[in-house]
Length: 264
Ligand SMILES: NC(=O)c1ccc[n+]([C@@H]2O[C@H](COP(=O)([O-])OP(=O)(O)OC[C@H]3O[C@@H](n4cnc5c(N)ncnc54)[C@H](OP(=O)(O)O)[C@@H]3O)[C@@H](O)[C@H]2O)c1
Image (tube, helix red, strand yellow):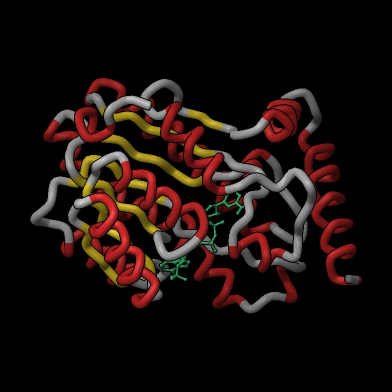
């Protein structure tokens, strides 16, 4: 792994830092010597993680509590770090709603889009422009293996991750001349709270530690990372199929695995 502090600067901001993949990113970046801004809603968790990171790695950590499904609170995050030079932004906060779309609560579905997509573009705009002025920085977007196909029962989630993937790839092309590294990170199933909520599990589920290690190793080298061999095969094989076939396959896997979990 390259020296992240040297490449991007002193500070990283991680959304969804209170658990799962975001917490692991926070711990790894602090271990690499970067100061961290931890963003999520659960304050006690963030405070505890921040204290541990300060004690263990002798870095600075700032906790910013915000509900990223709220546009004003997300804009408030940009203001809350106005005095810092954020060199690495990890757009990671995310939620999953599962079940047939028309049976769901509309407000929950809007919250999903606001958290998984809208917060990413607000933070990227707010912090990316300052990276552009400094001519250095990095942006990581948590997309997903599900970004490459429509998936029934996860309709809104898969579409939101498709947005994240395409947005990251487009931004990467725009920022090539400004020394800003962009990555769309597309994990398959990863052991986190989100997977517990999804009622979806299988033996191929990866550890968040492994996912984050792979991402940080590849940062600056490639703009698309799919951790794990099986995930890579699933991801890239969708290019060989008709789109309706991908929808059928991914939807069937989600349906059957969720039914199995519900029977347990
Ligand atoms: N786990 C997987 O299998 C998997 C696979 C592919 C992609 N991903 C993506 O990875 C990202 C992280 O998910 P995870 O698996 O690590 O799940 P997780 O453990 O549930 O973590 C989600 C994080 O997002 C934060 N969050 C959720 N809603 C928020 C809101 N409205 N405002 C602020 N923060 C919010 C949560 O913090 P608070 O609750 O404290 O606010 C938490 O820190 C997501 O974007 C997800 O789509 C996950």
